[in-house]
Length: 396
Image (cartoon, rainbow, N blue to C red; front, top):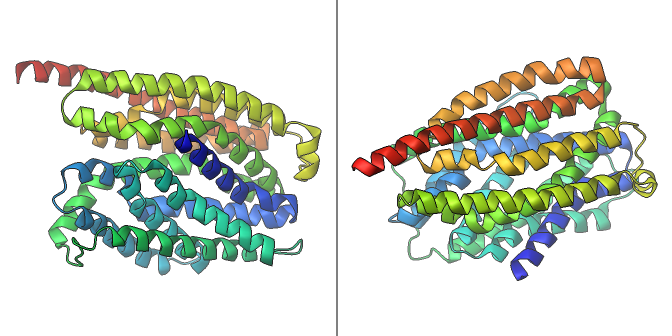
């Protein structure tokens, strides 16, 4: 029960980070801030270089757990240095993305040790809490989007220090700074398909932001991002079920207990889908009330339609979205590259096309088509490779 309560608090705090400023700053300022958050999320995934999924798979058999973490951090630091010299990318965005990537990877320690409450606390709650407190004490109605982004960076850095200190204290006996270049190279090669796949799906889920900003400006982006991020909260139970049981699915596949793994995965998908249907429906009704529109200064008329599109997306994703992880667990993650290319091409083509016909609403249609196409391909591939894997197991 405490895990559920902690997860609820984490989800609420993250929700506050993405939504709370809209209630008192201008639409342009909030649009600029939400645009930066989009960049930070995308770059954090790039910098972490698949570290979360890699660690969950590597730690159970690792001889030195700290070295496994350290390899991930070294790779992240190299990518971060490259980003620092990238033109037209602010230091606030780069440092924020690097900080979040380190929080994501180092907090895996708590998930690996089945300390789910601590995982939520260090991964989400601290960062969000510090940001809200900084806004309360330092923010005002005239605060700019740039200043909001700086406060977000400060909250990330404070949370990072706490996370690194706590994790390193638990590894004092394994502490080392030496990692071979061969280890880093092997880790990078192994993770490349995962990284490309993860980046593609994050890019697809956020690329609509870039198109809307360019076509309609920060004010329209402000309202669109509000709806999309609020509807994203409907995936809360899916994320909770995965956080509690996905590592068990990975462990069962590693032991070649495929039937048990698939049974557990089916349970996660079934529970996730039912919970998402209920939660997404409640959220869609809530954000379309006059009270919400007035309090958050929503001026666009597409809120209801977009909320329905995202409702469909999240319900179907909760049913199909687990197959990408399962491809990884049976060592077929390289085939996710094909899915990623398909999804990326679909998003690049469909989002601007739908925008040209339906305006801002069209962006949500493009996201729906792209992500569900990728999920469906993952299901087809997993079913195919599972049948072959079962056949090979029989003759081994």
